[in-house]
Length: 275
Image 1: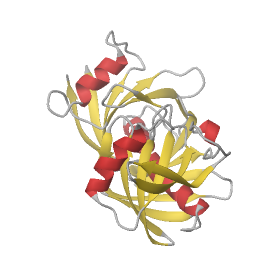
Image 2: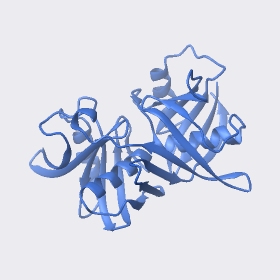
Image 3: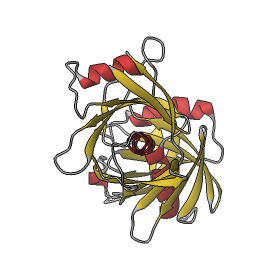
Image 4: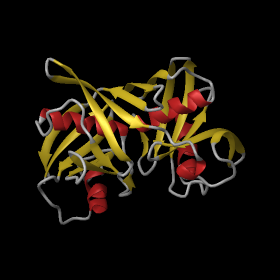
């Protein structure tokens, strides 16, 4: 089986092209096997390219624990670069079917080389029922959540996948590693949730660390960066165009007047191989 390893500011993925090929192995089992960093290839996720009845192709995203994610912003940027550089698509805008709907990445070219990829991440879903999240009230903005003996103020939303934001004065590894899994698996979130820890630097910059559902802490998360900016705007902490500093590098997120979120950043190929 041939694969391509790619990364978007340290958030790494294994891409397997199944547009003309079928696998006998269960996708969930495959994800566990190949994402293992000691006994497999090693990655934060597995991306499968599949034929679509509606647009150019369909993408499915699997976490290292075998669970399936609705979509992935950084993974989508890597996917767009892969498709263009292998001439599987010719246009700079690509329509990709995902479990979160049709996602449209746009290639930013320099001398016909992919310099960066901008992804239209769609409109954030702010209603509690759409996250989904248990509890009272239509929206979850600056709501109190108790973890052990500590209380946190959270803001939650969905970008096709669930996100829970916690604003902090200062980021720390111990906070992420301890509170992250507790919030991810909290009974308030029936489908679990991604958890973003946000430190606001100024009106145009934030620092972010992400505990991803089914993965753990990652160096970067595109949808998490977008969710963090939405949460910042809802809590009047930043403007609508924000540079997001993550452990693996920077992403640019803009929540435009059409209510769509746009995510920009680089994507790189690491290597190809067979397993």
